[in-house]
Image (cartoon, rainbow, N blue to C red; front, side, top):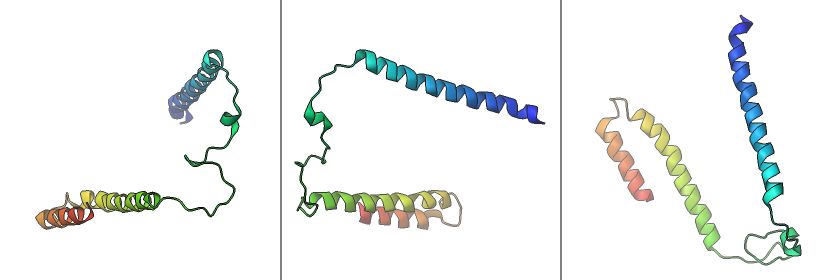
Length: 109
């Protein structure tokens, strides 16, 4: 009975070995081909495009909030769209379900 699992174990082992091999080759090639130009700016933390600051309570542009809110709205739209797409295949929903979802999408977009 355990001999049925041998092909699966071989597949997993080969996958891990190939993944390790790709990582190893990537590390080796990056060491060989990189250009080493040390710079103190490369070691400083990146603050998302802002200048470095010490106070966490600085004002920043409202556009970031707008992007976050739009992301949440469209993320929720997709969360409603997946179950609707599954239920739409049933005959009980029919054209009414399709029209209702198109109205919902039209309001959101």
